[in-house]
Image (cartoon, rainbow, N blue to C red; front, side, top):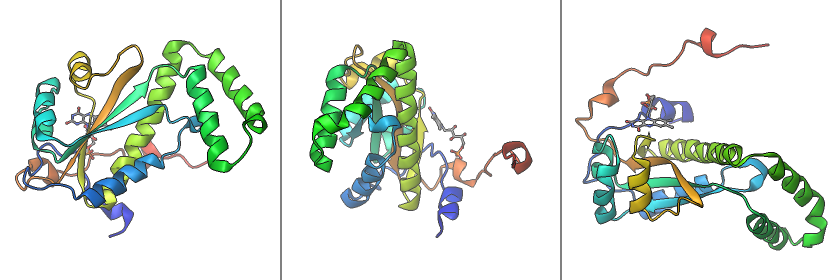
Length: 209
Ligand SMILES: Cc1cc2nc3c(=O)[nH]c(=O)nc-3n(C[C@H](O)[C@H](O)[C@H](O)COP(=O)(O)O)c2cc1C
């Protein structure tokens, strides 16, 4: 199957088959694809929570407006975004680059200066918005990799922020739950799999210049 066929086959699942679970290898492949996501300046301003216990999934059910995916999925990925990128975070990032690429941290100063000045230009609200955009790129990669692995997904933003944050023990001063992704295998009776894709026609979507 080529990747366009995989993308045609994927749809946002409303009901998974609760008996079918992802193997640890397939789950790790999808997570590795997420890890390899590009992010602006390479800062990866997020964490990826992987909910696999039935107990935690059940706790989360009431926090979602469409609970059917949560109660039937194999795994739930929660993308949690950092609200602020502070000096400490940037310092750790540069130490990491220095160690990984075996470059003295002093040689990275020009890059660091440009990041510092960029950070100072933005308000807290703009920073959060920018950080969350990186999380959506991650979401796209996870979904694409899952489709290639023949794993079904449903991206979900329809949750109650206070409830989900409390259950997952997110410190809302520091982080925000941005988006979630349910993973599993479609239930045979999920009617949505038979529906045609609704997408803009090419002439409205693409413009060649
Ligand atoms: C960021 C994002 C958030 C979404 N949130 C929800 C959601 O909370 N519940 C849901 O059932 N579907 C959700 N969807 C699925 C969309 O409704 C779906 O992708 C769109 O209708 C296109 O259909 P398809 O994914 O089946 O091709 C979300 C999709 C995206 C990309």
